[in-house]
Length: 175
Image (tube, one colour):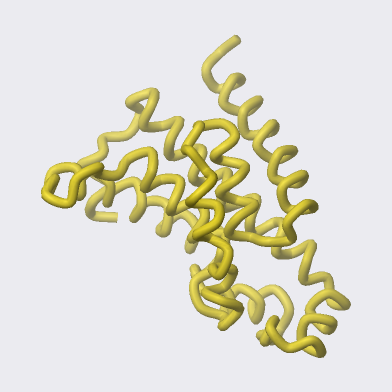
């Protein structure tokens, strides 16, 4: 099997895993991280728990959970283990910045409220029952599923690119 075919197979498997995790949790940050954790063995327990309040930064419309879950996964893949490891810190930035750049390019923003407004013509306060119902009624769950899928695929692609050496990490720092 060619590397491109293997990568596409992995992405298809991640899509299915994400669907299962999202159906189980209904939580963008946790489901996106859990899907990546299943394939990259990131030690999800405590991280998964820590993601609990982070969909749209506590449903305030701020950073999208489909950004936060994958960024935490990328941090576990590329991040430093010691606070004094400056080189490790600098190595973790390029893949994370590249993730944000690609996510913004594909989805339009990293902010939950902006994404909802772009997809539905308005933002929603998902902590309010009436807004959550309106969000569901206009297809919000389906559109967010697509956003979450994008985040997981972008993160997985970045990991695959780094594993294959097809991207010069130094170039990504300027992204």
